[in-house]
Image (cartoon, rainbow, N blue to C red; front, side, top):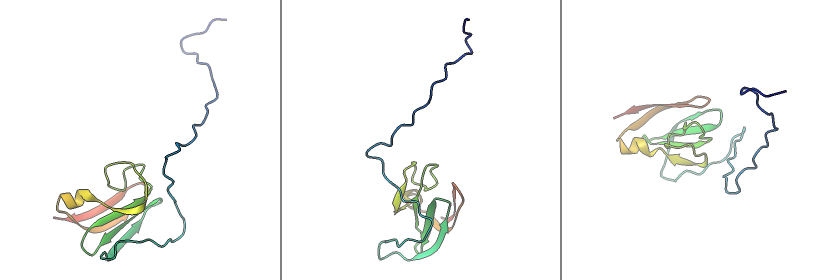
Length: 112
Protein backbone atom coordinates (compact mmCIF):
# COMPACT_ATOMS: atom_id res chain seq x y z
CA UNK A 1 0.00 0.00 0.00
CA UNK A 2 1.48 3.36 -0.99
CA UNK A 3 1.02 6.65 0.78
CA UNK A 4 -0.47 9.76 -0.75
CA UNK A 5 0.89 13.29 -0.20
CA UNK A 6 -2.03 14.05 2.14
CA UNK A 7 -1.20 11.21 4.53
CA UNK A 8 0.66 12.15 7.67
CA UNK A 9 2.17 9.96 10.30
CA UNK A 10 0.62 10.63 13.69
CA UNK A 11 3.09 10.87 16.52
CA UNK A 12 2.27 11.79 20.09
CA UNK A 13 3.08 15.39 20.92
CA UNK A 14 5.31 15.86 23.92
CA UNK A 15 4.83 18.87 26.17
CA UNK A 16 7.91 20.98 26.66
CA UNK A 17 8.88 21.68 30.27
CA UNK A 18 8.80 25.37 31.26
CA UNK A 19 12.07 27.26 30.87
CA UNK A 20 14.15 27.36 34.05
CA UNK A 21 14.26 31.17 34.02
CA UNK A 22 10.54 31.61 33.23
CA UNK A 23 8.91 33.96 35.73
CA UNK A 24 6.16 32.53 37.90
CA UNK A 25 3.19 34.88 37.98
CA UNK A 26 0.80 34.45 40.85
CA UNK A 27 -2.76 34.60 39.55
CA UNK A 28 -4.88 34.78 42.66
CA UNK A 29 -8.62 34.58 43.05
CA UNK A 30 -8.56 36.41 46.38
CA UNK A 31 -7.42 39.87 47.55
CA UNK A 32 -3.72 40.34 48.17
CA UNK A 33 -1.84 43.19 49.83
CA UNK A 34 0.10 45.23 47.30
CA UNK A 35 2.79 47.85 47.80
CA UNK A 36 2.72 50.96 45.65
CA UNK A 37 5.16 53.84 46.08
CA UNK A 38 4.03 55.89 49.06
CA UNK A 39 3.47 59.09 47.12
CA UNK A 40 0.81 57.45 44.92
CA UNK A 41 -2.87 57.66 45.78
CA UNK A 42 -5.15 55.33 43.84
CA UNK A 43 -8.36 56.90 42.58
CA UNK A 44 -9.73 54.14 40.29
CA UNK A 45 -9.25 50.38 40.01
CA UNK A 46 -10.46 47.71 37.61
CA UNK A 47 -9.86 43.97 37.50
CA UNK A 48 -9.84 41.72 34.45
CA UNK A 49 -9.90 37.96 34.59
CA UNK A 50 -6.12 37.81 35.17
CA UNK A 51 -4.88 41.40 35.36
CA UNK A 52 -5.50 44.59 37.32
CA UNK A 53 -5.20 48.28 36.50
CA UNK A 54 -5.26 51.35 38.73
CA UNK A 55 -5.30 55.06 38.04
CA UNK A 56 -3.57 57.39 40.47
CA UNK A 57 -4.88 60.81 41.50
CA UNK A 58 -2.16 62.22 39.24
CA UNK A 59 -3.64 60.43 36.20
CA UNK A 60 -0.98 57.73 35.85
CA UNK A 61 -1.98 54.20 34.88
CA UNK A 62 -0.36 51.18 36.57
CA UNK A 63 -1.05 47.60 35.50
CA UNK A 64 0.01 44.11 36.55
CA UNK A 65 -0.92 40.46 36.17
CA UNK A 66 -1.06 38.26 33.07
CA UNK A 67 0.06 40.09 29.93
CA UNK A 68 -0.12 37.47 27.17
CA UNK A 69 -2.35 39.63 24.93
CA UNK A 70 -0.53 42.94 25.67
CA UNK A 71 -3.47 43.98 27.85
CA UNK A 72 -1.08 45.54 30.39
CA UNK A 73 -0.14 48.29 27.93
CA UNK A 74 3.64 47.97 28.19
CA UNK A 75 4.20 47.13 24.52
CA UNK A 76 5.03 43.49 25.19
CA UNK A 77 3.49 40.27 26.47
CA UNK A 78 5.39 40.24 29.75
CA UNK A 79 3.43 39.30 32.86
CA UNK A 80 4.23 40.86 36.22
CA UNK A 81 3.19 40.52 39.85
CA UNK A 82 4.39 44.08 40.48
CA UNK A 83 2.53 47.20 39.31
CA UNK A 84 4.26 48.95 36.41
CA UNK A 85 3.46 52.44 35.17
CA UNK A 86 2.24 52.55 31.56
CA UNK A 87 5.01 54.74 30.13
CA UNK A 88 3.30 55.24 26.76
CA UNK A 89 0.71 57.54 28.35
CA UNK A 90 3.40 59.53 30.17
CA UNK A 91 5.47 59.91 26.97
CA UNK A 92 2.43 61.21 25.06
CA UNK A 93 1.42 63.62 27.84
CA UNK A 94 -1.88 61.82 28.42
CA UNK A 95 -3.74 61.69 31.73
CA UNK A 96 -5.75 58.54 32.47
CA UNK A 97 -9.27 59.34 33.69
CA UNK A 98 -11.12 56.01 33.57
CA UNK A 99 -10.08 52.37 33.21
CA UNK A 100 -12.10 49.22 32.54
CA UNK A 101 -10.47 45.80 32.32
CA UNK A 102 -12.12 43.08 30.26
CA UNK A 103 -11.16 39.41 30.16
CA UNK A 104 -8.08 40.02 27.96
CA UNK A 105 -8.27 43.75 27.33
CA UNK A 106 -7.89 47.10 29.06
CA UNK A 107 -9.82 50.21 28.02
CA UNK A 108 -8.53 53.60 29.15
CA UNK A 109 -10.16 57.00 28.76
CA UNK A 110 -7.47 59.69 28.64
CA UNK A 111 -7.22 63.48 28.50
CA UNK A 112 -4.50 65.43 26.72
